[in-house]
Length: 152
Image (tube, rainbow, N blue to C red):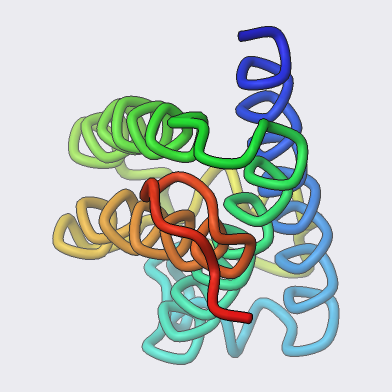
């Protein structure tokens, strides 16, 4: 039981670290003018693609880390999926109720940009789904979480 809890925590921390690092690097590389539409904080299709790619990779790594820490055959990856669904749903509701941050002018810092970013509602609700799929893929790489052993 302790290893399962540690697996969920470890998997979630791995996901968070990857997301924060990758988004920070991506924002610095492409810049605010490629991440946002001109003069506003509405994300571009490029940034939406980056969000989905980073989210999927982070979830796969998180699922793998979770499965590696937990005992083989543990349901810890399923618990991580539930956590991703709950926190992702809270985030999506937050995105739906987010007030307009106003116009975007000049250079902005990474964390200011992240706090003011506006994404389409369908994108916000897709993230938990992508996260769940990624966690299950990562757990499957270890052969845990589904009750089935991995292929030799």
